[in-house]
Length: 364
Image 1 (cartoon, rainbow, N blue to C red):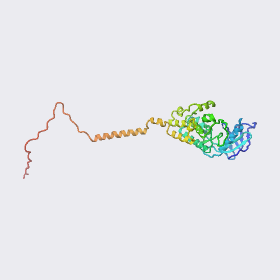
Image 2: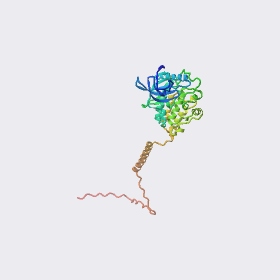
Image 3: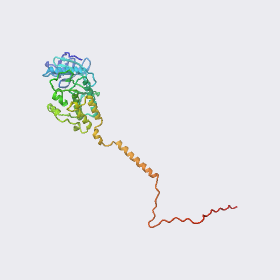
Image 4: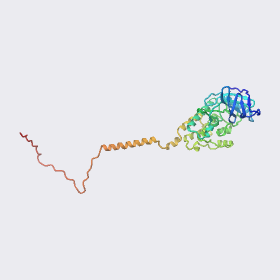
């Protein structure tokens, strides 16, 4: 497990000691290239590692009012992520702390884009949804197997590599079994994807991650979050109180079976959700592979072209068979007598002895 070490940080000229990470030129040995994004826990920078000659992602903790609490969560992220070497979870390369910026963690850099960027282009295809769900589901099952709950599953934290890799990142508010960071019931996460019990009670569980994954896949398939909106308070209220919509209410081509899977995974009752992320993914994959018409509407779907062709050929064969049978057994012609004319009687047989045959001798 990487330990926090003290590293120098080089800043742009004429900046203060507590300048933001976005203006830093170097963090430790890592040369900052540009900012990749910002989250609830801090700022992520793209940087270059001169020793290993590779690009990395450096996450620097945001300086907040409750700095000690944030630092504790940040170190928790580092320790949680460092325990993993999983193909669907970003790898931790290094960690440290600099006087000017505070703690930072160095992750593998995943080129490509986030699921958020993909969704902004429109709903994903069922094939893409299956690939993404399987990757995130495998990552969550790995985390849950050692008692870690991610608690912030959202499209921004799902990275899609150009080689087809799907990686889960940002364990900044992950909870390890002995964590005491949220005993006060403080809500952590993103309301649009958070389970109701997290918003109302600050409760997090593996089935809470399942709920969040279902919310993400709902948006991926339809292009819209289950509870859209920009106001965090209004969204939180909707998650807790409003009726959960079905995907088909947004995208009518979604099947009834897919609706059933999301109704289960987005249930407000934790016990009604799938027991694991893998179980949810398995149900979703089966429903998506049944096609866009689903189990209910499939009964009313038009017959396939191949079925119509076979039926036509069978009917043609039946007609030809009947035709050949009638041609091979013609009926005897019936001649009707002319009107008012009786048919002639058959000739009478002569009475008496029958005539003998005459045998003449041959002439000499």
